[in-house]
Image (cartoon, rainbow, N blue to C red; front, side, top):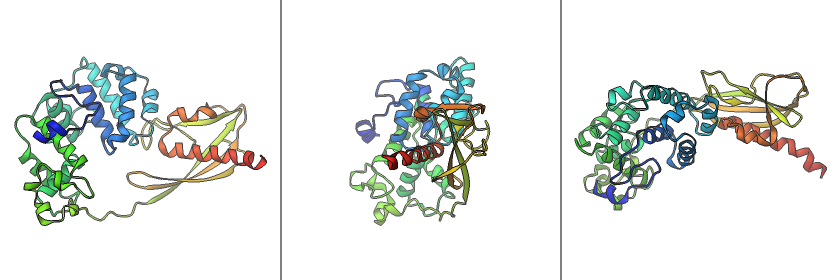
Length: 327
């Protein structure tokens, strides 16, 4: 805790000493940070809080605009739950529940996020365990059981360490310790404030923890995306509300029209449960074809999910080839 008081990271959602944490900003950051890095989240967080500075503002926002602003962060179910949660909190007068158990009842708030908000914002004793905390605890106690099976044991050990008072600062100190010193590779044990108690360091092999079970190879799927142009516009499709990339604008993945399709190449993307190879086909559309058309020179503003943004870049590059050859 003394180390954290001096060396803590300055983050846009974190309250400084003497300030009161804003539940909206803490909740928003924790949702964004799930399976995403701090560096990636910062610009999204700053954009969101500039456009929607309160939970009520976010609740009143157009859902398509929120999804567009989220594009690129991935795990789009989080964005849909974000909107649902904001609307539920707004219906409560803009007040987040104080207790961990009540927070868990809100859309998209699981055990980790509920504990983080309860501890950091409301000063409750809650056990906050993210990937950084798991790594620190696994090394402190040299937990030899592999993840994910070791998660209950690691949470139990984190519970033993969590103080009755100051649980929020303790949780953030543990996160910062894992992010800046007790890193996945080459941990800086010489600068670690808890090195004297670390069993993994005493063993001389901190890098071996946490132990991870061997991952099975991800199945590979194959899709086709269609880039259909007319008069300087490209056809986009709104994906179904439920399911993968639900509610997002994307290139059509079913043939949108009969035309002479040309293959522009393929793009690769990895989702949580599978790897994807997506072939991109380009063609010209009938001016009478109905649909959601977007100016080609502004397609980057459409908020396409990452995999479809890759496909769009592939199509745009393909469109330039004949011009370069002609020049």
